[in-house]
Image (tube, rainbow, N blue to C red):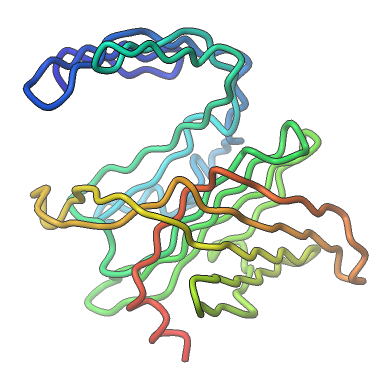
Length: 237
């Protein structure tokens, strides 16, 4: 990434090679942080304390405002008045199979959705784990393996992904439509030698209900990030 610098308050991009030249600075403000506690120091909950996880995940900013611009191959792009989101991964490998969804481009200004389902190695075996939040109207609705939530439905057909999640108080229904993807490098056993496909042009429909099936929230998200490693669905048959 050249001389680029990434922080939770700004990014400086300085890349100059044969294929692309990018320079500029984008500053962040009004960051919404994911809640932390001793028992749940990150979105991974108490799994954050396990030292042998192959992949760790963190939410840096659920929502924030942008100010600044980039010059990409001589073309200026103004990001001011835009909206941002930051998450991160670290470890040796991405999971063997997973689903990842994110969008914070909803009609509801502060809404932000994140869903991840993955095959997690565990003491010589594995389990299907998931972490998820919906942030809306200043409140987090959390669904995860470690808070005893469950996946009540999961399906992928004709580029339409359906996931239903339930916790003690709420039901979350997510329908994502998979659009065009680009190819990214991904880690495997410490080397960036795996190729995956990621879309940032997908769309997502979200519904949140209470346990009496009363609708609390419904909206459509655009510019959704979506990764689907289709092998994951054989573990839900």
